[in-house]
Length: 245
Length: 238
Image (tube, rainbow over all chains, first blue to last red; front, side):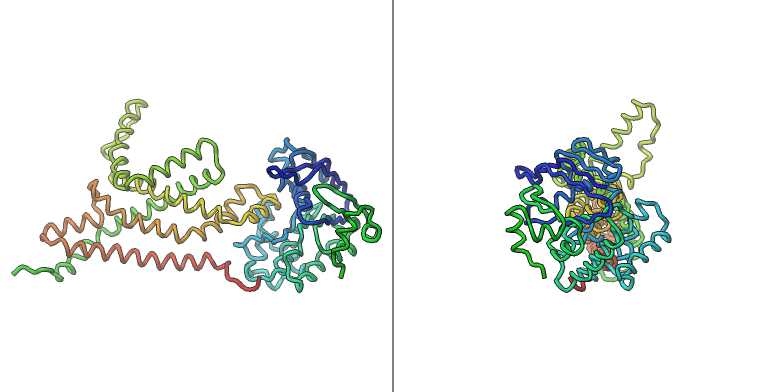
């Protein structure tokens, strides 16, 4: 489903990604964990070319782009494969919850407003936000915003959903409701790549955990293996500081 | 005995002066609307740092800011006919230069003037839109044009509205400069009416009250519009 080869990315003098490769199978749920600044988020952002890598290539489905040769048409084709849920939601401030979902359906996917509304309402029901569909994001709690963010990302029928620390900005009381929605999507067989500090999700939902440090993948494996028998000392150190409750 | 101040004349002159208020309003709205289009184009060129055009726009803004509005009006009024005559000679076109109404020059000059100021307002408003809004657009595969027109500009306009309103008020007051090229608008009408009775102060006060009145009405309209545009900003929760 996803095949990433040798991705490198620098911002100025600091090298954020140092030749990262990763393959992800259809339906697989992969969590990316690691200390802040390890390059997890940047890696995730190269998957839809929000961050364009300096070297390497990304393939999702049958769309492949190599760094340095990316044409707008290819970038658009790559982005059509995935959708993203952001740490800070990034809901469109000037659109209601429902309009946040229907916007791309109407302007990108050329659906009629009626078709888009039907999809939007269905998804809002799915994430339990149908009561707030005409509210603007400023009137929603963090957890509600993120559930709309997930509904918006689901609406475009992506092959892969990318989650960039979806619960990190939330007050603890809202984390549960967002995780519930994510578990539900996982149960439906969606391919998910999740950057998270939420070790419960990593352990209970994901099929594979990838530990990043210093711009590279240190090790990866099934949750029970990685949590119970990490091979590398750095992984062990990192996990010893994380909470699992 | 000569009256120091003729209140009666001031009041009776009002209808005559008022007849020219539409000219002032037409110039201020017309040039603001054209200026707004100019401003959007210039702001986007500057925001995306379009090669060649962006430095040219910067030059244009610098020139407009650094020269008096009256001088700009004179340059347009005396410059455009020369350009048009030269164009007629060179390309064999047949534009009736002397037939161009003065209001065209005035609209053009003020549009260029206010467009420069408004473009800076709009550019900074676009810059103020959170980068996450762009990212959300791109992640949903919207292109830059869709992101700009559907998400970024509507949010930027809300931010820019108070400043744009101020620009409009400036233009509205600057329209009084149009009398210097002989266009009869509110101020020059007042002067002509005052000249007939040799009473100037009264009519100038009439004119001032009318400018002020229009300004107050506009401020009310703008604040209603702003409230409407900010409806999505009401805050509850985090």
